Amino acid sequence: MKYDVKDINLNKKGISRIEWAGNDMPVLRLICERFKKEKPLKGLKVACCLHVTTETAVLVQTLQSGGAEVNLCASNPLSTQDDVAAALVKNNGIGVYAIKGEDTKTYYSHIESVLAQRPDITMDDGADLVSTIHQRPDKMHGNIIGGTEETTTGVIRLRALAKENKLRYPIIAVNDAQTKHLFDNRYGTGQSTMDGIIRATNKLIAGSDFVVCGYGWCGKGLAMRAKGLGAKIIVVEVNPLRGLEATMDSFRVMPIKDAAKIGDIFVTVTGDINVIRKEHFEIMKDGAIVTNTGHFNVELDIKSLEAMSKAKRPVRDFIDEYTLKTGKKIYLLGEGRLINLAAAEGHPACVMDMSFANQALSAEYIAKNYKNLDKNVFTVPEDIDKKIASLKLESMGIKVDKLTAEQKKYLSSWQMGT
Image (tube, rainbow, N blue to C red; front, side, top):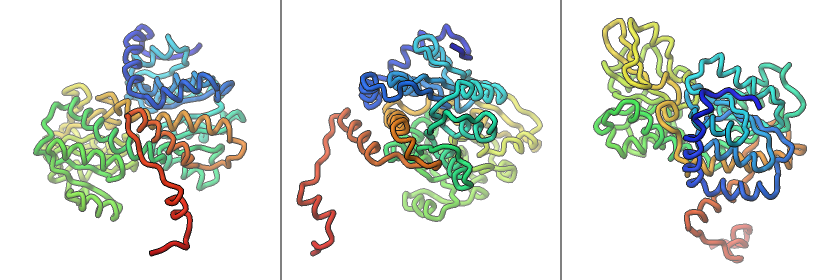
């Protein structure tokens, strides 16, 4: 078995941490038990490009229980938990190619290593795996029957491919499942981003002017949690509907050129490029903190920040101090990469339980239905989404009502009115 991890001897620590996460992932545990019996992925190779965390480990173990041969690489250079990578290799026989802090060259060499195993199904977080396949058609082979995508950024990239009729195989947008984006994006990103910022800076959030760039589900969750810690929230948006929603949620809404003058902490979460640029760095306060919780660090124009600076130095773990030529200092967290994974541990396991349940069941769906799927991006089937929600409620000891026969008839008819 081939692999590339930082230190295989970290495996014992990884085992206990994976077990801890698994205790809080009851839905995936139920799926794993069924997979062990039914083996729906038997004979299939699954290539995963995901954040190598304890929660991902539970997903990978579930896929393996279903009969799949799994190979895993990181979907971000700073998100790998090295003890987890070691545990998956040593104790589960998974081919893992991931080292926290790996450079860009190593990052893409790890993607190539996973693809060299000739997968049947791809499982992506950000679409770097799929993008590599499509940029290197000579490496593309006939084995791939379908794939899944975990995050908003990746779904945007894949829909762009599909729009140009260049997508080479069907992909299920796991991100669009309600049991994913309504919970993972809102509650997971909200809490874990604040966790990362606080671990990195040890700053008091209360009383600060906290700028959230992007008011999608992730931005809503982040604004909610920062407000709960006493921050004064400013929302930056380009979508008038979301801007209106943020206003109705009691937040100040303004363009980034205005927010840049008054913000203490800035967080980008848009999925777009150069949200905070040179002209914004120029007018920020001395000591402003800038970070990102979107998938790629391109949301911050780091090249311009470096060009504007006369000095740069690390001042704490995951904090670089940039001294501008004017003498003003700006602090960049986590190299502009996902701060919730760069400086913290990512989403809580109970949230990822639903997201990764969608991944596992979508992989099973592909294995059973790929012959009937076009080369397009599909949403998670509604019955899978509802099943996951039902299992989650059941695990929490919560019950919901069921429609009576009369109610079902009423909702499916047009004759009955007032």
